Image (cartoon, rainbow, N blue to C red; front, side, top):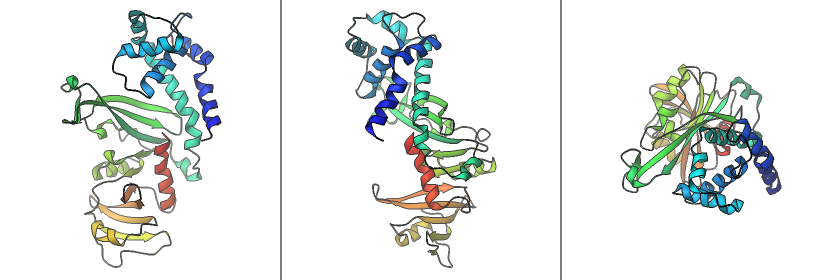
Length: 305
C-alpha cells in the first residue's frame, strides 16, 4: 500500500476530533477533562503496539509523555477499568478493520455472492507472567508456562468482528469456531489448527463452505490429481499422498480428489518456497465454480486480516 494512502487512512480514523466524539458516543467521556478519548486510544496503541508492556503504570507513563501532563495513577486507573473503554477500543478496531476491507476483497468474482458472508477464524497467543500458569496454562510448559490466546472471527463481507474471546493457550482452538448452524451459507477461511476430517464433513453437511489449510494428509488415498493444464498425475491406481509427493511439480498448482474419513474431498496443493514443503488446502467448493488458482486467492484473504 502507498505510504501516503496508509497515513491518510490512519488520520481519517484516529483524528482527535473523531475519537473524542466517539468517546462521548460510547459514554467513555461525558465532559472534556485531562484524560480524553483521543489521548487514551493513542497511548494504548503506543504502549501496547511496539514494545513489551508489563505494568499498567507503563501505559500511564506513555500517556504523560505524549500529553505533557502529570496524571496520577489512581485517576488514570479509574479510566482504564471503565467498561466503556472496552467499547471504545472495540469500535476503533472495527473502524480500522472496515477501512482496509476493500483492499482485502480486491479479489472479486460473481460466484462470491453465493456466500452470505466470508469469515476468517484465527487466534494469537500472548505470553503471561509464569506465576499465572495455573490459571492460564500455556501449550509450551517449559518455554511459555503461562499464556492466553485471543480468538477472533472476522467478517470480511461486513467489515467487522463477529466474535472475539480469550482462553488459556492450552485450550483447543477448534472449540472457539462458530457453530455449524451459524456457518450455514457462510464461507470459512481458517488455518490448519482448526482442521479435522470430521469437522469439515460436518460443516459440509450443515450447508457451510470452507477453505482450510490441512495437516496430516500423507496417508490419504488420492483418487485423481491434475496439473493446471489438465494432465493427470495418478494414472489408474490410487496411491497414498506420501507416495505421490515426489512426482508433484513445484511450479504448478495441483487439484486432487482424496479420501478423508471415507468421503471424497477436494484438495488443492502448492509448493511453499518459504516452508520448503507442500501446502494443502481442503475445500468443498466445486471445481466448476472455483479453479485451483481461485481457491488459493480465497485463502490468501486470510493474510489481509
